[in-house]
Length: 131
Image (cartoon, rainbow, N blue to C red; front, side, top):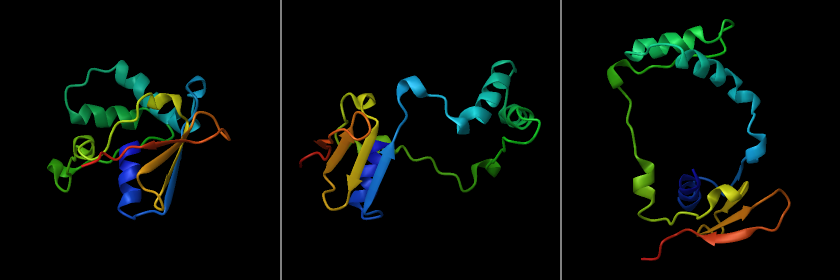
C-alpha cells in the first residue's frame, strides 16, 4: 500500500496523499462489520467452488448488506503483482506497523513522512532505491 502510494505521487497522479491507519488496539471498524458476517458463515460452510463462495456472501446478510461482483470467465480481469514490480524501485519501510500516519507529497516524491501517533513529529524516509 505504501509503495503504491509513493508511485501515484511520483507519477504525478496526485499532489499529495495522506494515509491514516487505526491503532492496533482499536481495530474494530464499522465498515468491516458486514465482512465479519461473511467470515462467520464462510467458516461454517463447505466450499468447493466459486458458486459456493457467492452463495455464502449473498446469505451472510439478511438485509442485503453484502454484495457479490463476479467476472464472467475472468473476462476483463487482470491480476497485477504490484509488489514485485514496485520493489524494483522502492525500499521497504522497516517496522512499518509502528506508524499510523503517512504523508506523500509530489514536491518531494522521494520522501515519505510518517508519524507514530497523530500530531507527533514527522519522521522522514527515502524509499526510492538509488540506481
